[in-house]
Image (cartoon, rainbow, N blue to C red; front, side, top):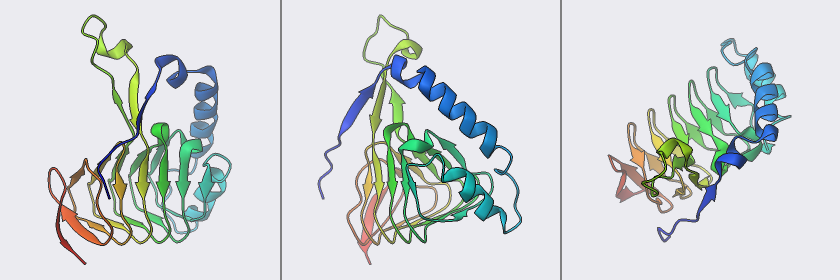
Length: 185
């Protein structure tokens, strides 16, 4: 598995388009009613709202407090569990496979600010995006940050508190800042 990344630019005009504002606004208005309820059946009700906005969702195990941005660019496989208070920013695209375990407070960060033009304030520059791909049967520990353009290979385990900036090969155990493979499973 190589570490090449397929980054692409998202213009400010595209990021803040009327379509994105309207879709995100409608989604947040509906999702806000079910986002923080914690009794067990709420997973099914959250799923019912998400099914209309997420590109592809096959799992009903979405815990309370999970935040979604650009859900129409997110795919979630079957038997995947997303625990409390994760932030899933789909701006650059996210594909989460089957049988994935995501612990609380995990952040999926698919975009960063462009900052190469010194004459233009960073806030006025475009965004650099990269799709995040989580393959099947992955376990991601609590408080992990997964940055843009990363692929985590099938059967891997990512230790709590890690910051993932590079691809992780299949069946790896990895942790740290930055996240590094320490052994295979």
